[in-house]
Length: 135
Length: 278
Image 1 (cartoon, rainbow over the protein chains, first blue to last red):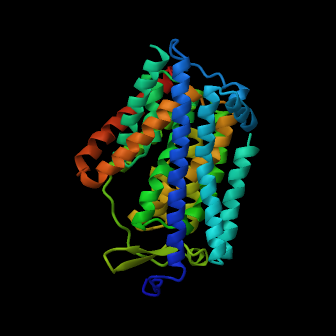
Image 2: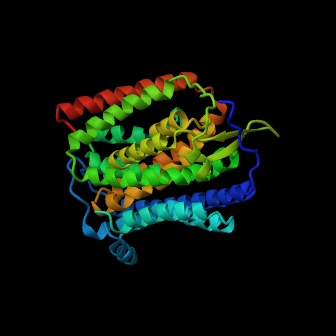
Image 3: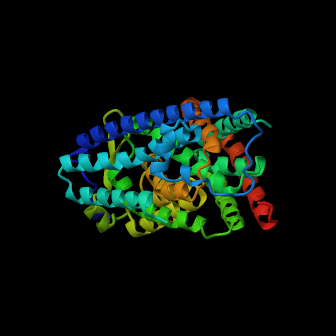
């Protein structure tokens, strides 16, 4: 047990880590606020148009294809479909953690930490696979 | 009930769920899924979809606050995200294959465990020899303990932590939750990291983990816009309010009450799954 010498406090690069994290924090917060604003706008417009009874979610029927793929959602937003606007907000929200990983890669590049550039790139590739190909 | 009334009731319930999630430290997802399925008769696929989105929102929304405290460790978080995102891919895939009642049953078990974990007394583990792998991967850091003092730490038992993180990711993808409770076990119990480092790094990881399931949830049609909109905004608002209160409140008694509520929801989910009502 005594053979273990703890690492020195303030290892090199710690300040840069702090700065990267601060930027990441600001990015995530901004992303969430933008996403929430879009979702709220879409939601209010949706409620303004739908005065009928509540939708029934008791049994699962997959959402229609116009709400399940990226280009159809963007197309729906262009035609001011309110549900597509909500979905656009969700896409912005889903993009924020992905942007976070990209920012970390840039941060590690500046720190010349090759190991962590590789590790973060692996995480980014898994995320991109999950967003576009996973089925 | 009209669409407007339904949205308002959902928003208020989600606000309460977000508040409860933040104050109990369990996160909004673990609370909102049983609320939607038990109280609102929502199919579990729509419920986990709405929950997953809310989890991303609360994790990202809280990130700025955690960064300011300076406890979270981006290297440890990033390394373990390889495990959680791979697990999430598998978990999300399982939701398209596993019958609804099994998802409900597993959810109930996770609720019971989470209730237990949230009130369990915490013991800070003693430092042992660090894992050589941890040193090579730079899974270390220092924790501010006072205005000028710092406590250095190194991860231990890296493979065990990595394995548990894969489980946490799988549960996140399968149940649409953040799996904060399992992530904390992996870092705190297996890797013997300081508790504050474990909880804040876990919070930071939740958004990336959840994003790895979001693509498949979207393509499988689990994200119902009219349901997600009041739920996501409610959980986000509730958790932001909750994290403000948390700083001031003495939470021990509150935690006990919440743990009982969550355990009750867990029992209800298990009973409903077994009797086929879910």
